[in-house]
Image 1 (cartoon, rainbow, N blue to C red):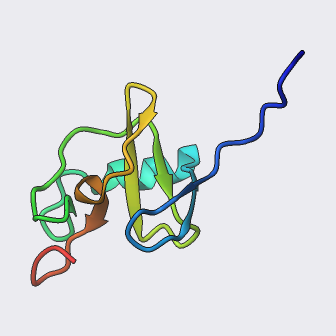
Image 2: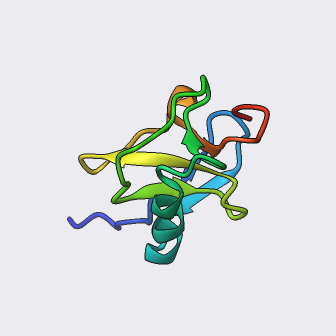
Length: 90
C-alpha cells in the first residue's frame, strides 16, 4: 500500500506564522545581506551570520528566516535569522 506524500507544512514556533521553502530569488536576497555592516543578518542574541544559506523556510512577508542544515529544517527560536536594525538585533 502506497502512502500519499503530502507537502511539508511548517509553522514558526515563535509567531505561529505559516512557513514555506524559500525560493532561489529569496535565498539570493538573504545571501546578499551577509557581511553587510549597515544591515547584517543576525541570530536573536545578535550574532551575525556569515555562511551562505542553501535552503531556508520563510513566512509570506519574508521578515525572518529559518535555515536548513544538511537537509533538516532548523525551526528553533534561537536559530531564527532576522535583519539587524540600526539599534541592534530585532
